[in-house]
Amino acid sequence: MDAHDRNDLDRLVQRYLDGDLPGPRATRLFLDAQQDAKLTAELETYRRLFSVLDGLPRAEPPDGFDERVLATVPYDLYAGAPRKAWPQLVLGSRPLAWLGALGHRAVHLHLSDNRGTGDDHLGLGSGSVPWEDLPARLAALGFQGTVVLEVYSRAELVASRRLLERAASCRP
Image (cartoon, rainbow, N blue to C red; front, side, top):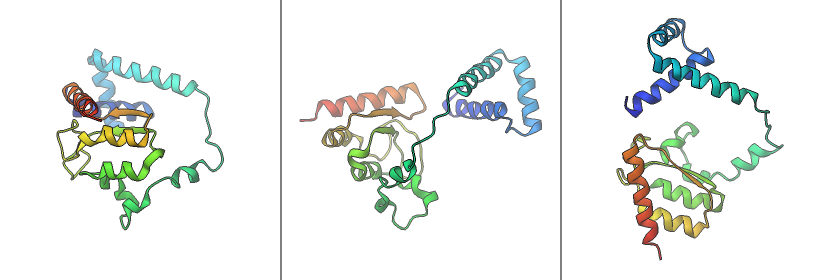
């Protein structure tokens, strides 16, 4: 199963367990699980996860939290674009410009490369973003946060990590 199929299966199982899957599709998934031990195990894993999550105390954000977060968004990078299109604006070499505008407010990054036309989730260095510049930019910001590499395969994960390690080792 490739990463795309895996993501589809994850979404399908989650919709099934949330009760959001249309009746015929839910029935088909139920019947498939009767014949497929891996699918049954997957369903059980999600059921246990959801049970644990449901048992956690609900945390409410403090008053004014939304306003404080929204006040940090570098809206000037999105000038004239409808809010719905904003994720698509962080394409091409734009993520590094966006990071610069966000500045010291950056505390967690989700990184993947793209070809400048969509959210492709390519390994770093496989698309159009100049990721070699990232370590120097993060150092200049004093970044101490966390990073998630959003790629589809282990090979892309390894290649992305190596690219960042090489770039960081070349930093003055």
